[in-house]
Image (cartoon, rainbow, N blue to C red; front, side, top):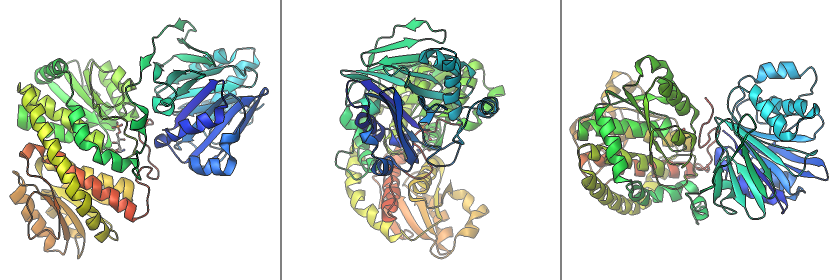
Length: 590
Ligand code: AGP
């Protein structure tokens, strides 16, 4: 996934674009670049490296011109090099484009174009610049050239293009990658995410698949694929600027971990009627399938237990990248519940599209208002947890769990009780954060030389083990495996030796006794056990204390200290928990 942004107005574009790209770095940070238009030619600077590194080296902010485009990259096709950084140019260096997505037929297009065009990169994206050049050379306007080019592209794209021959204009288009336009005083924007221009405006126009947007300094016009103008009323952004800043924390991830009591309370602010309608359809559905990726999938796995334990409704969870392989079992009697913070994860989108084609009903739990998944769902419950900038999902996970608990309570006609119980748990979490905010860093530092962690748990807590392990892997780069405690003796126990760290989620619930005996099995082989529990046990070499709650809520209270553990493990290793290597906040490629 990458971040694109364009600005055209009455101010120097480069500093505005640079500031906008800072808000998009969560989408990719292996290279960056800007292209601006001035005196009828294109000025471009780009390189491998973070935005700060590239700006320091090339003074991106000094580029002249009042119109320009910018890009932060998460490499898909082509190594992380200066030549593969965006923007990309046509042969005459008069057209510049930036792109988020994957052009699946880029090889075929490159073969056709390379007879007449000189390619300077290994990316899929560059074919777009030369296609636009082809059409423009036959007299097409920039917007016509972009529209004709779009028709030839297969795959996903959000593109913005400028031309030195038409300096007062910018054109953008999208298919399967997010794109929004912003209408501001003194200029207009187009970007992957409205966060990039929230400081200038909260007036947004959502661009749908197949549409094209033309921006000048004082106008934003929308067209369908046939070139017919579309009148769309601007929406108001649901987030405020300060929600997308660190507010004094070293990293977004810590801010977002500490926001979780509030995130739970905000997630509870659901429309009662919507919850009732969703709950009823879930109960009536002949087959209910959750689908999600990564952390969101762990939330769905817990939701599955909660629906069964609280509402006696059995559901299954199908990893989004696998859902397409089950399409023979998905039909009009299927209700798919897609769980996604970004609402743009390609695996989720592709699975849901196939399910929709088979007649399934689609519900989604999404954080980003107006995201692609939200707009293709029959019903949407929003997480309401504000922008989550840290690549590692934290508050969005607890917000997802909260809504899943609330749906389960609503299914048994106890909406108000659910709200009350979960508000009470959020207070306990706030207190526990105070305690673990001091204790967990010490444990993380004591374990900072350890590798190969095993996270074990049983029943409803098993997905928490998986989520805790994922956090450690993705931000501290420490290998960790989440696994059912009962499975250890069937093989993995061979890996437990003197000092092997084992994180055991062992709350005082229906899994306690059996998990304790599994802990004993690891201790007998020399494991160093970190116990996550409301009870201190002699078997624990380290104890991460969690509050005693109704047993259904232990996943909600036990994941938070594990997030802290991963965060402090990353910091102890001098890593940036907000921008882990090789990863991006939303994976919009298959
Ligand atoms: C979690 O910390 C990761 N960022 C990743 O696993 C993420 O949960 C996954 O890519 C799904 O993203 P989504 O919730 O936006 O669909």
